[in-house]
Length: 315
Ligand code: MG
Image (cartoon, rainbow, N blue to C red; front, side, top):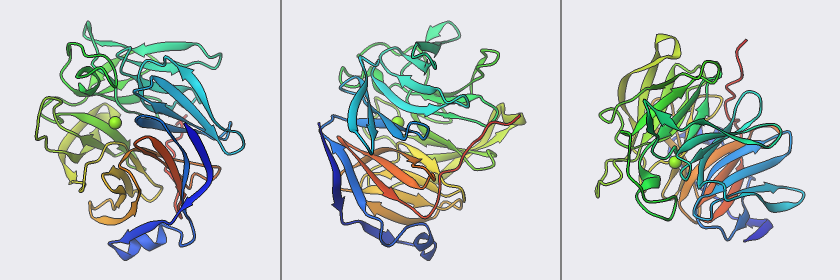
């Protein structure tokens, strides 16, 4: 694993819609921050520590990177971590394939399991997680971490794939989608006003030719239900995995050739090409305008002329 703190790469953009020009910076370069990992996901920015945490899933560890001191191992034997975010108290939330659980790192460093079962049976392998302004935690639970011994441990599936809503206040958990709604729930993100939830469907784990698309749901019943699921966008080449929304409601999606920016209408606005496939991404930096990209075994970043949306706590 090595660090390339000044390894700037000529950025290649594709402007599909003129609106994309307002979202990118003509003199911002794609920067490789480090490489030498196996498969990276789960980037999450800790502004108070000015560092990025990221999951190196097959190596079963969480890495930490910051501008001043570079790369270090944050946690080894981390439970095959995948998607990550922070709750409104700033605590790290981690999807764990190995522990089949949603984990929370407390302020004292202790790791607690928030959710590891539903209706008396173990979860599958939580994949990605977001926090709504009301503090509820929404995560996907597909089968992907159960089908081989590379990004987890090959074991039986106990649950149909689903999106769950977990309320840490009362401990309640509810399945928000059925397998008919989403075959393989993966990345997820709320629109700025949280009236919509974007869900990446990467297909059933045993499907050799899965249909992979970004689905869109209305958030209804005061945030306790999803309805009117429909196709939002189909990424090509490759497929969407992790997704993030900017302050104007544009969706930034991982793709086979880089990052795609998609308008709320579902139309592709433009692309930022990367040397390798992008799995997950997140906004960060002091102003929230730096996009961090997990590109296979490497992490890249690029500054944008927009910011990631903040779902701040509601009183
Ligand atoms: Mg994912």
